[in-house]
Figure: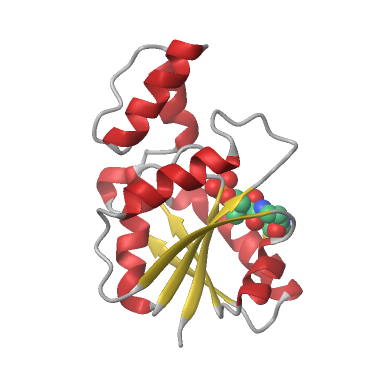
Length: 164
Ligand code: PNS
């Protein structure tokens, strides 16, 4: 059984993340979308809200027979991957600027768990500039984010903004 984790902050999940996920489903039997619970950061969405949104959004993702689940985790990604029985960590690379950060993480994670490989997939070029951070910034300043994040996430962001 080829099992991978796809870790990230996902605050919120973007269409770029979904692009990477759809590219990785043909490669694995099971992928756990692993949502980091990072108490040091002030996220827009709680970890529970992020997991719930991702579960909804995953209903529309092309699975190719791959079993997709969503879990939150705290602490080390490599440790979570090992405890989950995964043999790979999936990450996306949008442009050359991502490479150095991903390389450092992949090498550190390999040092921590030598049996787990990081698999980096190249994002579709239409998502090469899409990030959760930029999308949130644009949304909060009233810009259009349609096509960059799922509709459901935009609705949840509007709810948040209404509440704020
Ligand atoms: O979506 P992001 O913010 O790019 O994801 C980064 C993430 C969550 C993969 C990274 O910050 C991470 O792995 N954090 C968990 C703590 C950890 O394992 N740190 C060492 C990484 S080499």
